[in-house]
Image (tube, rainbow, N blue to C red):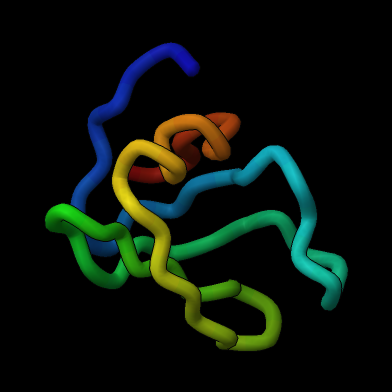
Length: 62
């Protein structure tokens, strides 16, 4: 990944697609854990920041 500059409301692309078919997520919480929401089905998940940084492919919108 080129940079780790993301904030609340950023749109990110993850390496693996969600079972609904989308791989675009919106960041809804930033802290020790990162909470992201699927753009297509609105499902939310929380990941530790270290795992999130490993799984994110690129940041579309800051």
